[in-house]
Length: 145
Ligand SMILES: Nc1ccn([C@H]2C[C@H](O)[C@@H](COP(=O)(O)OP(=O)(O)OP(=O)(O)O)O2)c(=O)n1
Image (cartoon, rainbow, N blue to C red):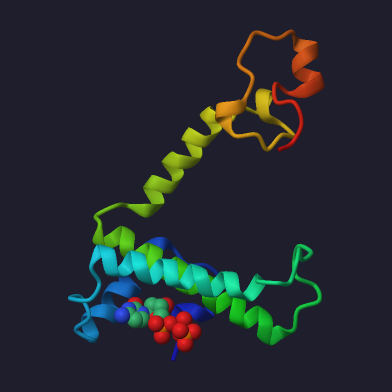
């Protein structure tokens, strides 16, 4: 069977349709209510967290993980994504559009000139007038939190 899993890329729109077909074919639309989907999503986030639980910090790329462990991680990440896509659809939210808009809003909230190198919350960013050299030395956010 040639499915989307064999392809290089996939769109949120395709995933949305796959999930809608999956539910309709099983007569599961009645179960896919906003609240049920939210709880299912949170449950899957819990399963995702379990994979990392007690491991301490792990290096990016997970170089020491076995293939089976990475496959399992991919499955749990996918469950989270699929329920998120389905929840958005059922709530009538265009997730792709909403996410792009949010990225733009984030960029306004966290201007590079004030936040570079700092992980401070936007509510703690110094907005008082500073000289250019002050901005360069502390980026308006004094140190990481
Ligand atoms: N009512 C349901 C049940 C399942 N799924 C889909 C979305 C998820 O991708 C996956 C979740 O299936 P399970 O509830 O069986 O959870 P797991 O796949 O995580 O299995 P397990 O809990 O054994 O790890 O199936 C769905 O859309 N609607």
